[in-house]
Image 1 (cartoon, rainbow, N blue to C red):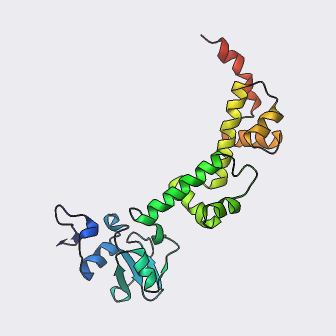
Image 2 (image 1 turned 90 degrees about the vertical axis):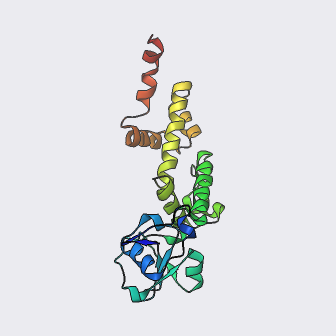
Image 3 (image 1 turned 180 degrees about the vertical axis):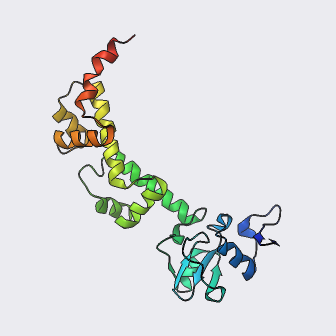
Length: 210
């Protein structure tokens, strides 16, 4: 039902179960109502793209708009996904849940060293997606690109080795996944603000502390 200018779902029913008329759907799109994100999709006839209701792009005229209940139905009608709001992976729809699973699988592979000696293209190929799409998934679900997360994980592994072993720094770097001690030192300085040797130098003081 429509209350004033705000779309309201009848009590006891989910938004996805509400059949809206065109005016109600367009009003929700014009206001960029987040309640409808992933529930309805907006196709723009003049551009040939379809968007999420929360897309930041300029709102098109009503006569140039049509609505679909799924991203797949919009694509079947000949529309392509907007590059700004990525409607094919809108929250709360099955595609979004699938992308989260892909990001989690990628992170697990990275934790096991997939990017220590490989690149993002190879990782994406293992997951059956493109490298650019994988980077978008990491930004959406994990807040950082794959290489940055891989670097942080290597630094974490190296820190544990520095604290828990007496290995020389060259061996720590190799076991942590760095190509050299120099690269490990640069990563520590960038992420931790100091070189790895300072963490080892702290160990005796920490062990002697009560």
